[in-house]
Image (cartoon, rainbow, N blue to C red; front, side, top):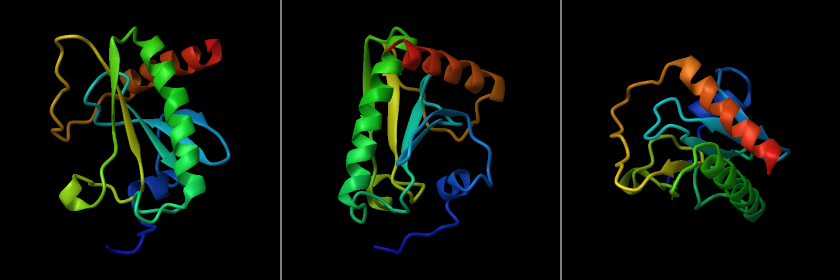
Length: 142
């Protein structure tokens, strides 16, 4: 396993070097809209601690990510009136990881509706902003 690379896209977002549509933030975690969503409302939960994936994450970072994932899961489900959720987390290239900073995908799901393929197509910023606002509103109401 390689060492953590501080030039990854999530590290840059955490440092404010790249823009993101923030949905939620606390002392240990950040939740942002996925710019290439596989479903409307696709959110990423990342720790602020610099960890490549589950193998090198400190237990405290994993705990914080799990708690934030649960909080965002409830809000995403409510915001989009989803039937359920898919939560995914990938580790290393062979496991499907593309960005090497620990992150958890939270995607609202509907009966009979497949996830969109991961084509690399970026969503329009105004759509991401509207979806983020729906989730933030659901967080306030929870």
